[in-house]
Length: 335
Image 1: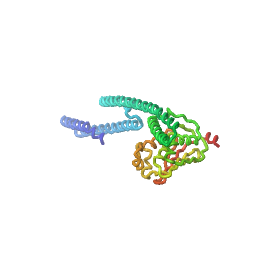
Image 2: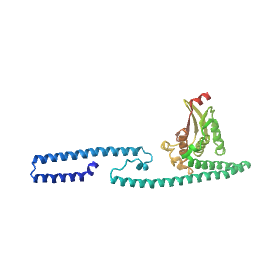
Image 3: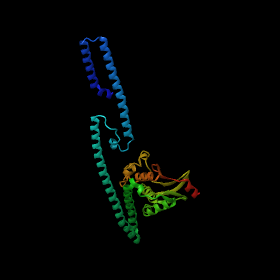
Image 4: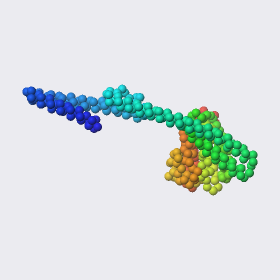
């Protein structure tokens, strides 16, 4: 419909020309039959031209829209456009190229700023680890009730600094992981050891069931994920808190279950727990919640090919399931 509206001036001009030609032919003594024949031919040619032009334009524009939809970076559309046909199209294409150039310059500047900020965060985290480690050593060498309390707080600081570092690196995890076969039990015991003072301070009863088998993953990233799950279990604990680690084997996979008896997650919040910045009802009750822990866990699991799911009932606790894929070769070795 828009096409035909745009062609109204051309149609009006043709009709005026046809009327003028008709009047001229009649005035010059031409027969009415000849005049009508010329008018019919004129209208038929005009209708055919408009119809063919409409079909060709529709096909061309639909092709451009399809190309644009398939293009991930759509600001690069001027690079795939066909050569302009008219002077007007040439002007529009030039305008689009100018807009594209401006966009590319802004993207390049934004990427430079993000890279510089990420590098600063990484340097800061590495620098801050030195006084944290020194503080831990001082506390270890002067054991008392106060230093045990300090050690628990230092573990929390370490977790938050690690969260900052992993958040900065989460877009480029492929540059910072090493996949190898690791006993699942080593991952669990390592994460517990890193949080032992926090667990002891909050009197969390930890149970680790037998975990036979190997998984192919990066131990540093998985240990970070477990640190976040342990931290959440402590943060949202109830009286007599407990934490249980167990393993379930299935066809081609091994699942690590991390179960707590904490406050649980409301059913309305459960579908959104992996969203960035989402804290939910529990997070609003705990002022230290950032809404980044589970978001990072899910993002890193997706990068590493690990399945992550939460099952929770309010007032009963939460179970996190980490699903590691096991190939046939590893399964045969473990058997």
